[in-house]
Length: 319
Image (cartoon, rainbow, N blue to C red; front, side, top):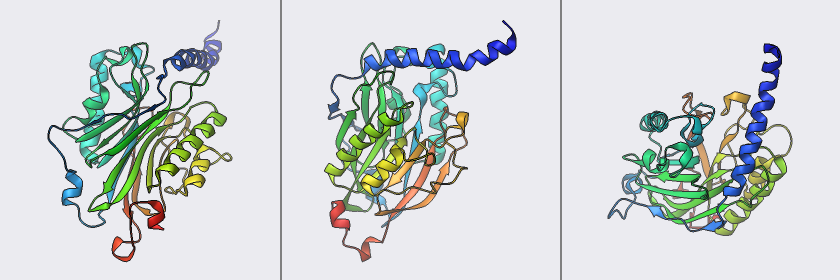
């Protein structure tokens, strides 16, 4: 077999291996699709650090990152040592120290799992940087534990984690949502979401986006959605469009081809979506190669200012 033939077969081999792994992982989905997860808080803390000292309508800094099970840009987490995983997560911690988001959404975030060092990656990333954390554990069998997570310096309330229905050749996916009080305004409740949609099948992503939209609509609050949607703006109506239309959401410069978050395929798969009650002050795709995805950071504010609008608890009250 010539080197050229071997090279041409490599993508097919990678795809075949990926499919085998995906089929195996589909059996690891949690048996409880809907859970009320525990909010982990520091001992004795009852108030939000951000809310306590925030200026009226000061920007809320949010960030989303698919942490890729701690493998950084490596091929697979199973092929690296625990010390390498720790080094990779330390690089993420360094970025978090620099960016200092008030709220962080994670995807492919591991609890103790045999393939990534057998320790809780979410707790490790939260240490000394975030005061509240909640995990959406979408896989919890066969010595695996992973899913979505929210880390926050604002108090998290009313948590809900939903794992999407199992599907053939799709690893477990889902979302976790919790409520924050907008900094400086305890009467304004906002749902924040970390979500991960299926990678390969457009129809499956749409089904998952529909379930997410129905859940958030029933909760009835202004919303900030952060996560890996595995969908782009261009190329026809996608799960991204469905989600935005269903909840009247908006995003930052959807047509901007420079906002690539998945460099391997030059795609924008990671998004921050907000309800009409918010405006983007800033938005940036971070350059740091701490995962196969790039982190996305944004600052958002309420609009119009609360002094000129009868803001209330629900979305209906804000309109």
